Image 1 (tube, helix red, strand yellow):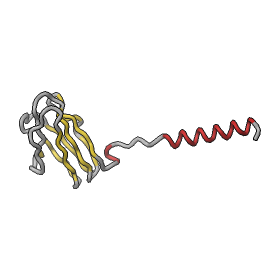
Image 2 (image 1 turned 60 degrees about the horizontal axis):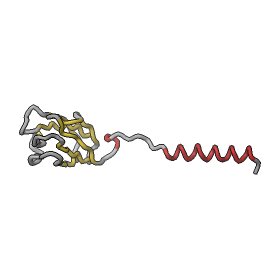
Image 3 (image 1 turned 60 degrees about the vertical axis):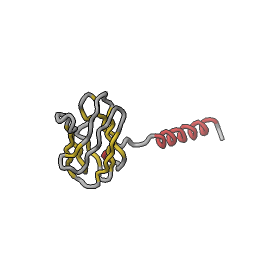
Image 4 (image 1 turned 90 degrees about the horizontal axis):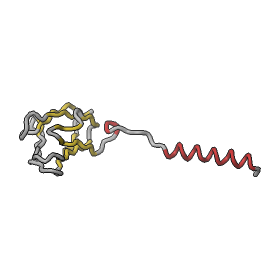
Length: 114
């Protein structure tokens, strides 16, 4: 094989390999997986959170104060979460779910399930 042909072949292989290494960026809404919401500075972050039905949302308390996560309809309620504690809930049905920390009622958030 001549040098020019070898260079062209190696270039083509490199392009194919680089394309194979690139994976499409998937948002949380594109997959039914575990999604994290951070509880920090007396806020839920992010909110609103949009996920697909079947996704599990995990709240992680990173504050120095205890918090909990409570559905406004009573669908779920975590116990008190100290620093670095977490609570998870699997959202099976589409809808809009409003949440609050019943310890600090000004803390509110929304999970939208598609």
